[in-house]
Length: 138
Image (tube, rainbow, N blue to C red; front, side, top):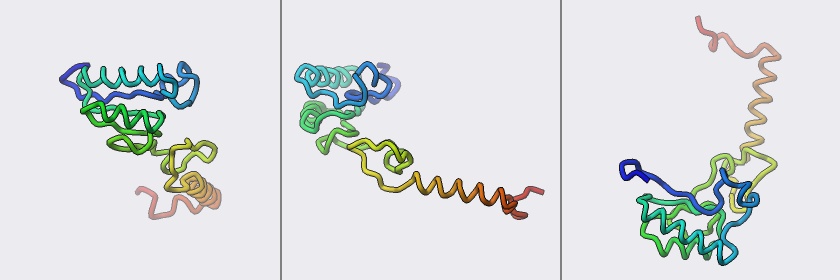
């Protein structure tokens, strides 16, 4: 890491490595995996990360790792024992009707709202109601 550039680390389920990790699975359940995650968090702090994300790890492990580090932890699917929380915006907004991580709460039925808006747009275009005179540039 470069001390000139602020860096946030990411351990646990890292989506870019999901295939090497065996899919979208909870990380750190086995003692050896939990120890590896503890070492990774320690190393991130040693290297100068200002914070780190713990993704899809058991709550007890996230609480333990967070308690061992002096830099803040941000949880996503790591329970309430981290210093902060984050959710992927598309999960929070409910944009994908077919997929919802078990740890994500939908705060909006975004899929149906977007679908309704697109249907209305298509109907207005087919009916020659869009664009209206006020929406046409002179």
